[in-house]
Image 1 (tube, rainbow over the protein chains, first blue to last red):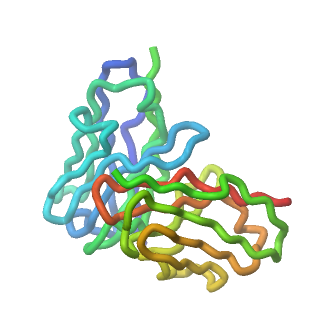
Image 2: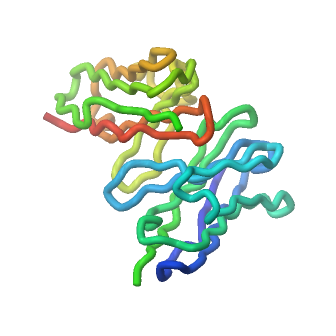
Length: 118
Length: 107
């Protein structure tokens, strides 16, 4: 059974940093396109960042230069380093993935909540 | 970036009725569009990928069509569990983008 489990969320002040993790089981993250998707409270889905099997990374304009997506193949985990956090980064952050050929999200975690507030 | 516009924002229907949801792209995404369903308190679920392919385990009452800039998700006969929010997502180009969502609620 495939499982994606996010962790690392919490309350952080504006300007601070946080590192999210996504641990995968039943599934090899390095062989698949993976992404982070967020959802602000009461709002719609927003794609944040993606990584290809080859390791190329992509970002939404809203987070480019502040967030870094990385992967630890030996631990089968993903990470999202978030710096210079803003109030508008407050959201539930999901990791998602599922295909080796494309960003088609068969599998989702349950999300980890990031709250940016003073 | 490619902007996806979903309409209507809310669709009020009764069980057994047909639902037709629209997603329009600001430029061609070929057929590289997916539909996701989200229920309150749950992660999204993949319904349709590449415009018209049902994901594993998705009932036949869900169908997708379209290419280029205009796409449709059709639910042929609404079941009680289909009342939810639906999002389209394009993967034609980075950054990937979602539409704003269509809420299907009970009339």
